[in-house]
Length: 490
Ligand SMILES: Nc1ncnc2c1ncn2[C@@H]1O[C@H](COP(=O)(O)OP(=O)(O)OP(=O)(O)O)[C@@H](O)[C@H]1O
Image 1 (cartoon, protein in one colour):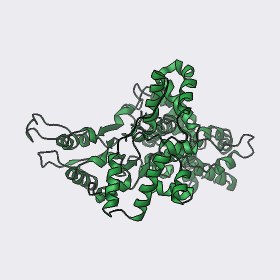
Image 2 (tube, protein in one colour):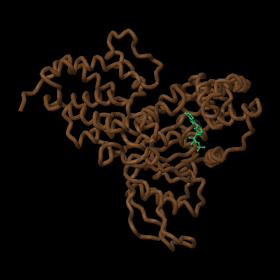
Image 3 (tube, helix red, strand yellow):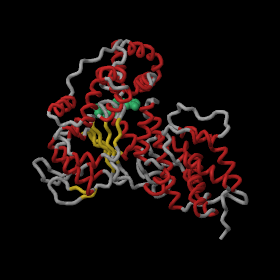
Image 4 (tube, helix red, strand yellow):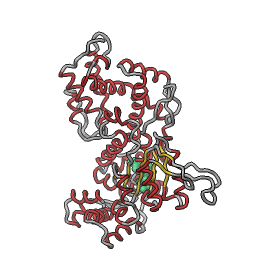
């Protein structure tokens, strides 16, 4: 056995800082560590950058130089180190390999994950990992993790529009839902083990809960195929989505849990429900969960607690292997204030609650976000003609009253842009009274709300009407930060 190498204190400190940086959430605001690693580099990281991962390539020359020095007498390998040094170098090698190959996954991601990895890339990746001393079974795992990281980079960072602070916080939360707050322990301990960590997405209508669920579902685990030259399934197959409010009460149970032939009139065939179709690497998105009836909530709670369910008309026990992402556009106070939603189901879903920012909050934090959204939308709607339409659309949007509250959020903005292209202008439609507002008022009148829910609901409603936290602060006598805090707890 070759004698073990010891890292110098300087290398140990450098590699330690590197791992702390690159295994942390790339959307977290702390950019100090990256700046320290880049040292006297003339162009320190830019503060306004949303994801610091886009700058990791700048770490490579320094890292290459250090690894080069360690490689005296042949490539440095994991087996050259022992104890804590080996654990540290494992992470360093993993990052180094990822950074070398990450961009080469992009064509595969652009093809939706079908068509294979390409023999060249599969072989090079395997050789690079083997060269660092990773065993064949570990190589397969890390290649799958690299693909997952690159997909997350694409679907969480690139595919969502908006660089404002609330959007950055959203990306940070989505990243944590996929990789936890510590990527290193996810990679080593929790990979393929997050099925029992549901996520609950809250947010007004049109804020992008469907998009957020898609970002989580498309960033999930997809393992290598047996031949090692591609992945086990297309990216889209990782997410099964259903809108519960679009299904009639009679259909929901059989859609979710499936049914046996003859279970009820019209059940002429066995039907495989969504829970049975969603495997251990899949995510099931249950949209509008706030609208579920109490009997179905009870069945869902059992499924979440025991991971088992029975199809309608059968006593057969089936196991649910996948992960749940649920969403509702009802404010928390209204959801929990009435009798319609089981508290125990809420707590079973509440380990990871993500609240999508409203368009008002986003524009409040960064007015330039409007142009960014319009640009992205125009490209989607008009392709090459987008630039020619831009000025017309933005001019018409500027005619809206200052602090217009965008009650329909990004979906409303999309319709506004379409309407401007068609008619030349946009006049918001008068809104009918919203059902969740009624529920909140009803809960308040019945004395079922505690003080935070009461204040939160009140501030949120004022905010919807007045459009800015400052305006709400003037009415309520709170300062702006307190108003914002109350709005976010609602
Ligand atoms: N951050 C965003 N960037 C780009 N487009 C967005 C963003 N958020 C939402 N959208 C767009 O807004 C529309 C509504 O989004 P989505 O259906 O995900 O909203 P939702 O919150 O699920 O709404 P609801 O509660 O009514 O179902 C979609 O067309 C989506 O593409």
